Amino acid sequence: MFSAGVNHWNQNNEMDELMLFLATYVRTMHADRYYKNVLSLHPGATYLDIITPSDIAYTCALIRNSSHVWAMKLGDSAETDKPVKPLFTSGQGKKRTFGVTTWNKAGMDYFDEAKQMWMGAYNKNDPQYKILRNYWDKWIKTKGKEVWVMTRDGLGKKTAYEGRGRIARSNGC
Image 1 (cartoon, one colour):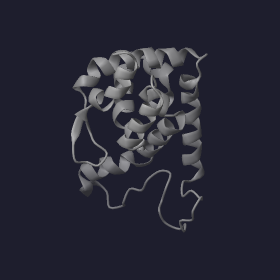
Image 2 (tube, helix red, strand yellow; image 1 turned 30 degrees about the vertical axis):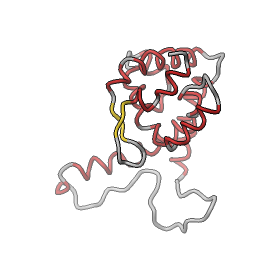
Image 3 (tube, helix red, strand yellow; image 1 turned 60 degrees about the vertical axis):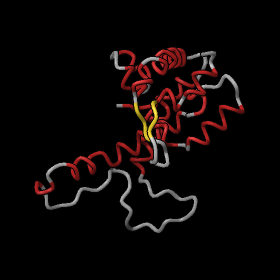
């Protein structure tokens, strides 16, 4: 449901789950060094200014593509004899070529739909923009301090607030 966009989460009073998704899963789209460099080059920028609707849509598509495979591997594998495959990629039958995707049409359509749902959150004239940013500013300073995330290299842990500390401080904190 993360692909449904900000309005869905706001209307269902589940913005905390959305913030957690953005701070943990979407965060892995770029290296911590990338975030640090961009924020130092653009004082006053926030994490939400760095990630894009495309980053969010891609994260949603990755989860949708393989979540049932992960669930099957974590569950009792004796239930089925047939291996479960990802929804949008098979990894078979196509030679990997630079610039050519291995995602099928359903996967690309899902990505495009998710991206469209998130476009409003990145348009300053759309109410979703203000809702997302206001909630993020409050969340990162309070609940973000309680959310632990693994560093991209897998060698350390920090809170979402610490990982976004430059973001929070760059807004005058």
